[in-house]
Each structure stands twice: as C-alpha cells, then as structure tokens.
Length: 231
Ligand SMILES: N[C@@H](CCC(=O)N[C@@H](CS)C(=O)NCC(=O)O)C(=O)O
Image (spheres, rainbow, N blue to C red):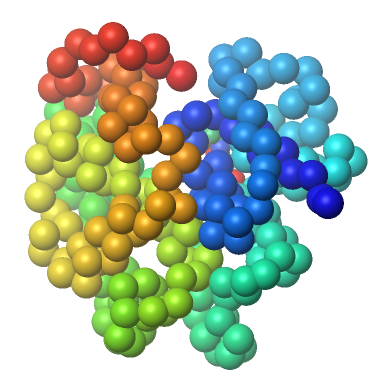
C-alpha cells in the first residue's frame, strides 16, 4: 500500500487544499505539522521553496505545490474529481489557476498593518467575489458545488480561502459575501463538507485568530485575548 506523508503548517490553506483532496479520496495519510519558525533539515531537503505542503510518497518521492499535488492525486487515486469532459476540465483548471489571485484578495485584510491598508484591502474583495459569482452563474447546474452535484478539485482549492473570509468577517464584519448569493451558497456548502476540515472548526478558528494576534496586524485589536498557542 502506498504511504503518504503530508508535511504541513497547521494553519496553511495550501496544505488544507491538499489534505482535502486526500480526504475526498479516503486515502490514509500521515499529517505531520512542523513549526514554520523552525523548519527541520529533513524538510528543507525535500522542499525546494522551503514551503508547505510537501507530499512525500513511499519515503522516496516528494511533491510540492498544492495544485501539482492535487492533480497528481486526482490522476492516481479514484474517484476522479476532475470532470470527464475536456472542455469542462479546462474550465475547472482555469478557475484553479485563479486561486492565488483570489486568495490574496480575500485574505489581505488579515495582513493589513493599519486601518488605511485594511480599508484598501477590503475594497478589493468585491472584485474577486464578482469573478467567482459570474463563474458560478455560468456553470449554472443544479447542485451545491462548482460543477453542480459532483465535488471537484475547484471546490477543494477555494474552500480554505472562503473559510478564511468568514474567519476575518467574524473578527470585524466585512459584509461582502452577502452581496454574492451564489458564492455565499457555495461557500456554505464547502464549510459543511467534512473534507474541508483538518481540525475541529472552533479550535481551528481560534488558532487562526491567535496567528493574527501574533502577527500584530491591525485587525488583532478586535480579537480578545485567548489562551491558545499560536502556530
Ligand atoms: N503556491 C504554493 C504556496 C504554498 C505556501 O505559500 N505555503 C506557505 C505556508 S501557507 C509557506 O510554506 N510559506 C513559507 C515561506 O514562504 O517561507 C502552493 O500552492 O503550495
């Protein structure tokens, strides 16, 4: 049986994407969380950009980049999450290519150092949400996921960032997603999906908040002190 090791920082959304694909495929894997501030030598030796996720296979192959990992898992382990139709598959890939842009637009408020930077970051969210709203509109199939009823790699790719939007919105209300009904419904379906979650949800949100506090970002003033170790 193939052995999979997923190397992770606990709150990394790109790791979460890879872990979600593994869970969707019911693959047993070792989940190893390392300290971002003290990356071990064995990890540095297998991660070209010193980043997580790394998927180590049978102790001899190391894959990096969450998209490459997701595609590899989809090619090698059933059930296939990509659509069978080549056009639909190309459309799906085009939307997973958009994830990094979407991610930085949606989570930038969590990095803002002052109120002006926060406001500027918040102003960029509607454009990113609008892109997805239109994409969902075009898909317009019955069902709760990006392609309709069938879960896909697009779902696994966006779920971590939509979840983080809700985390940020609960620290200081942004109120943007309410204006995008299809995106809102999709995001809720993804949050409900058990595979989205690597940790109990409340524990994970507390960890995310602790990280905001640790980074002393502008938003951190709105987070009450909690006894959770940041990672
Ligand atoms: N494009 C990469 C992004 C991975 C990434 O940015 N990982 C972050 C943690 S969430 C990281 O390892 N950062 C460490 C660093 O930049 O030194 C992917 O999709 O896997």
